[in-house]
Length: 379
Image (cartoon, rainbow, N blue to C red; front, top):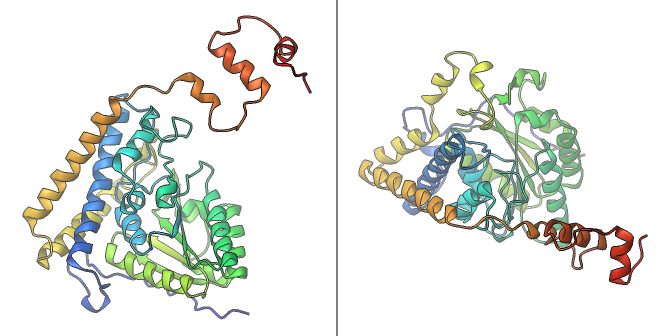
């Protein structure tokens, strides 16, 4: 039997809402580290803002914003090493950007043209990249929890000292995949970090309709793993708890369930109207806890990033996003024949027939005739 600590109801917080810090809790970071963290958070926000405007103007079809959750994404991703694996949901562009994914690649995936590495085959806001060990998300809620557990289990079998980090929301804790993933992870002590963005809403369903548990972190006890809670709008708190979880996982002590208390300040997606279900005044209260503004105040007060430098960074990332959009929109649409590529080494007969029909190369003829012409016969 594995002994675990019952998670405290207390929420780890390093940065107060006015930007001052509890100094003895601050994670060790260099000035360059701080600047990269702030810049990446700003870049994620600028990407979100531009993408939502693109969707509203009809230039892309769909987008999932992460406005207000930048500290969760960037802070947790910063605790990993380059070779570690990340299994995102669809609200983690900041994690992808911190790990080195170009902003052009993220936005191109929403356009689905020839600038998109996936060539339009994936739903928008489902970005993945083998170059940065970021698994492509799937739309069903919570499935990535099982993927990440499997990746971590494989690494343990191979004796590969890597860690897997998986993101999900409070709504995903109601799914069977949450139980399956954490139960397996606990039994086999896999090197996985289960990171729950508790942002208050699973589309229009509040957290108190997801679980009767007092907290989400306390669920860790049932699976025999460690649990922790942190202020998800405090990037230094996120870094602190994720680093501790990373150390346990890489050291062979098994998984950790992190519950990051945050808020989805935008809609669930570009198809959602949160004013129909969120109480009046709730958004304004959370805007006062904006993770970027809070961190910026801390860096300014500490003399690490003066106000002028922060303004320069903001302008820099805005230009980076704007330049990326110009480049993406100059690319051609995906040719229809690419629909039949990248799946089979040799295209089966029925797909060749469909391809030729699409291209207008065969105006008539049955599958039998097609098979005879190819020297094959139907199954």
